[in-house]
Image 1: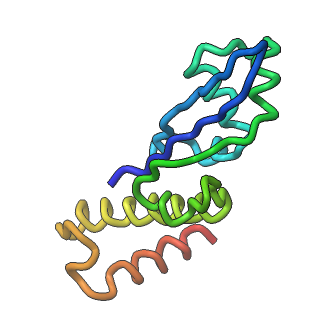
Image 2: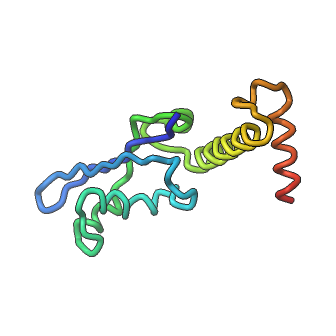
Amino acid sequence: MKNRVRVRATFSFRGETFHPELVLDLDELPPESLEPEALYPMLAAANGIDPYSYEYEVLEVTPLEFDQPEGVVADHLHDGQLDFDALKAALADVRLRNRLEEIAREHLGIEKLEEMPGLEAALRAAWEAGQS
């Protein structure tokens, strides 16, 4: 399942209302990019807003709104706002689980961790031991 969310902002500039938006594929986004400040340049680029313009300055002070969540994003979206810290932790867990499934498939021929009770816990413990 993909982890996606639409980010948008609505602002007025020189008597015109703008509605830039962008669908973020969080599976492709580096974790350090999952900060509100990092989203403004992406939103601007996707909507043809020059980062050296007054229009961009107005965009930067406009609150971001999020909707259309897919995957784990839905659990961390409340009233149009993302809980970035909780979402980053959840995405890290999804990435780890996907990696553990790859290891189980490659070395044990097991497609899903659920096929063998206790396998996920054992692999997580080994992973954490290797990290320390």
